[in-house]
Length: 603
Image (cartoon, rainbow, N blue to C red; front, top):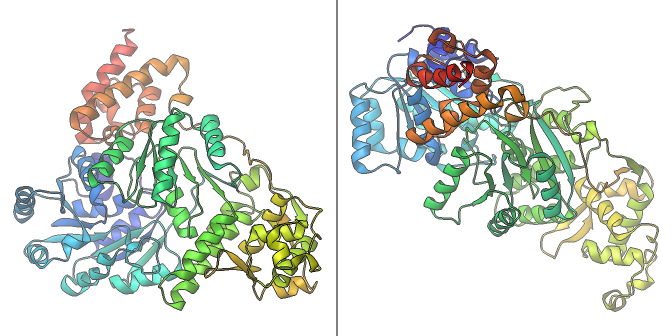
């Protein structure tokens, strides 16, 4: 085995240089020390433990909650010539025995293990009998009970520091606010370790948020205009909405599949495999889908419902554009989303301190939706990172939303909530403001209130926007014990008394941000190169089918584009292509070189 990190990076993984703090993290582990790594999706976290696993004596143990994806992760490593395997409940007893024998005999460089398997006494006995290079705890935010992806099995991982105190541990995640970070450190015994926090910015992702009007038609316009044949993920809160949306997209001519916990494991696996291995498949999913997905060419993430927190939003949108090429994070949300999430939160069985933190997280999410300044700056600020005032790649920067002095309208809305008894929902309050002649208003005698009919200067939709923004900004609270009844928050006092003013966003019909430059791929291939590009993709597809792996496990699009650009004709030239190491040269070099030679010779 080559003996420096740079040699392994080039010979095994096919890359010329490290990115960001990768080399410093690798050095910590090689020295036998622990590390906590926060690095954005697509930032190259896996290299930080894969390279030390190959350079340190023994086997690298990777703890991951992603049983459904372990096979693909192991396949990708084996394609690179790394002796990798996994141990989880998806294997037959015979297959498990083979893996354990390989581990005992020193025939593995890396082993992926599910947390529930790792903590079994038999597994711990097995690990104590072999030399371990390191423990890598992937998706480490799962250890946090405050986090958005909590896994109870992760709480048991504190045993690593107790039973294997001299084995270096590295915990990795793409998202963790201050609370989550503290809990990772405490539970995994990383207080004395070096913390590596990379920038959270994903500049290639364009963030766009708009109000729900006709969400399906809005989604259809977005897909048809910008992502007609692209792979992407559409997130919904409920299983029923997932099923209905996926079926509707199929009717519209898109290749879409549903994914949620109500499907059988076989269905989920089949839909996930189609997404990973075919081009242009859209997965409509609950938040159960996406963690650990390595597919590099996901071009868009859609939220048809409001996420519960900025951590969830960042984690989910981060699944787009892992290849560094332009991608879109597009979301629609409305007042009903806000009310439903607030009610779910207040009605939960959690402690008061838990609810308080969850409310603060939802408020931060709503703040991102309602601001008229740069979305990226607000998102990065939440994670403690400074950013320029204008990013130039979010809807607020590209098509700034107009604002208006909503002070008087807000005071009318708040006053109407107060005078009707702080127990009615938005639609009823709007009827009162507009002076509607309804039976319910007459039964309650609210036609005699001073706020009856004082809001006729605005249409019902405009009032809906006012109420949404007042709820989002914390002037109104939602009563979870009633049907969305609103009541005044303490913050409303100064506004009602005329001691402060408020600017509100104008709800535009549709936020049409300037389309991004297309991702590197077919759209950037000129007519002269298209034949070679298509031939290389066909070669990759055929090899992927033979190997039963996703096409990107053979080569990423970026590698194919380098082949189109540089036209290598010899093995040495092929080694200079990004993503080509010794193993891939030996396995695939001749097949791709043959395609290029035939193209160059005019066949």
